[in-house]
Length: 118
Picture 1 (spheres, rainbow, N blue to C red):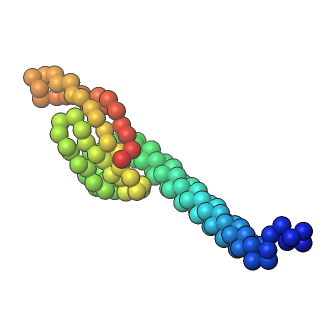
Picture 2 (picture 1 turned 135 degrees about the vertical axis):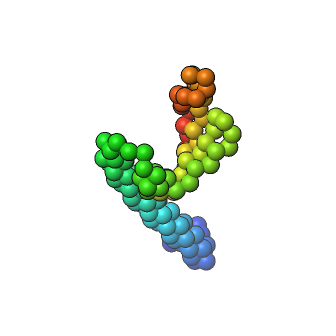
Picture 3 (picture 1 turned 90 degrees about the horizontal axis):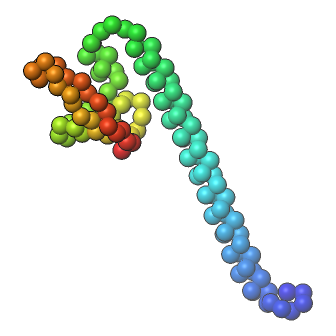
């Protein structure tokens, strides 16, 4: 402006533009930090949950009360695909599996083929 390359109004418009860009980027950085904090909090919750599950592994029981504490919901789509939703995380797991039947089909083994986050 001092060298008369731009007018006072042009300088004001550029300043307003860059100030708005700085404000927008500052907000994006703050949101990114909040997302990182939320992810860390979720990860800490999952680690705590895994520790509790590991503590229960030693129990010799098939208690539905224990399963009720762990599972929020189970959806069986068809033989070979099931969704599990746990109480500790805001997402689910889709497990695909196949069965091996033996002893005239009364006993079986379940082999997990794939597990993905849904």
